[in-house]
Image (cartoon, rainbow, N blue to C red; front, side, top):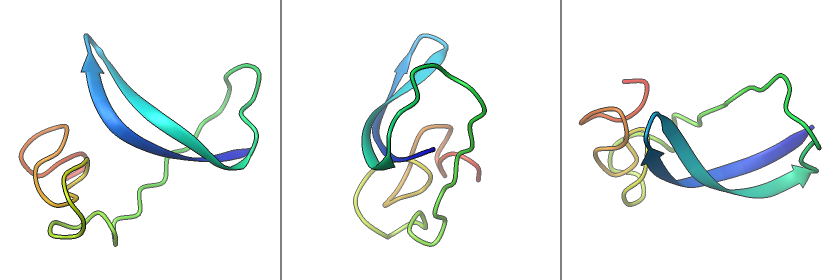
Length: 68
């Protein structure tokens, strides 16, 4: 299992691509089951600057960000 931090979302056609940093563990050689956890406490509007999911303002997915 690996814990990663994703940042810098970029839309590329039908794909949403991110830069990532491995925080813990190692990336698997091939794909498999995946889970995404979004820290909504940190992702509320007004926390930080720019980004996805309402962090500091509009993000990917509309004016209130992903999942709103």
